[in-house]
Image: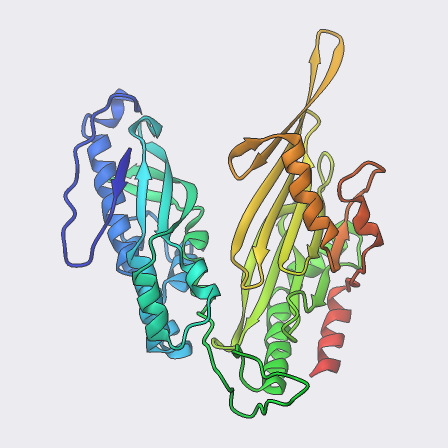
Length: 429
């Protein structure tokens, strides 16, 4: 197992990789494993330094590539300093400095001009620290420095040999690794300004917001801009799939500010139409609406066509998608807490095969990448379903024995078309 840790101002020694276990094309060159290891080391160091330019310099991306824009927005020191403040930025930078990347040499696959490797990102467990109220950002930072637990994100890094140098081409899970930039520590406030304790109603022990009316109006204005920016692709989805249910607005986490979610076209040509699900929340400290979840290929015009459910419990948001082809269907469940951090994922795989003339269906169940028993899977999902408080969006065919069938009896929110959604937001302003 290789463990790569980059530290600011300290050069990380590159450990030479043996090629035992790795899959390597002779055309790639004898030094390819070592060169790729150096790229991973430099990439890790740039993550630790909160350095978007450093990361981008290791890639083959152009400035109009989506990944380029994602990294620039995700690791933007000036933005966080301006919107969240210097103290919050120091917290973000410290969390980034704890990132390490582990991988096995046997998972390094190299061909003539491309390569990929399965990796595990490890990072200080900031979720645990953020969940406990701190008296100040300084206290939260100290708690992070004393944190022994880590979070892990399983991923894959892809490379291409370009101009004699190995360059990164894909970093599919960097958003999950840096999800902490969408959160702030809860700050303890014994007696918040303007709140007078009474005998019948104790004062809240901490505050997460500023003036509520201003925040609500700002959230509605921000959502209006988001919808307008995506208006063409939302309207294309409505036209292609002949639906007037494309946009939803509901306060899923119960903080008094609604969340915005919608379906928009991502692929639209004569052969294929595909729509993605986008989920936005308003962040008061940043003063803007941010996309906190994006699920690609939720609805499409091939095979089963794709189905989805978006529902909230007392503690979590769940996004369920179902689709596939005749031989393999997948039901994917992504779970988020109410700070919009991903907290779990579950999958049910349904395989349909012919053994001779007999049709055989096989089902497998996973928590993350780990296979679990059917009983364990159903117990976990049943708990979420039982605790459901709102079905925010649904385009799903329920069967009698479906584990999600009880959702049909839960309260549901109404979806709107694009024009109606804009009119509704105008009324709320």
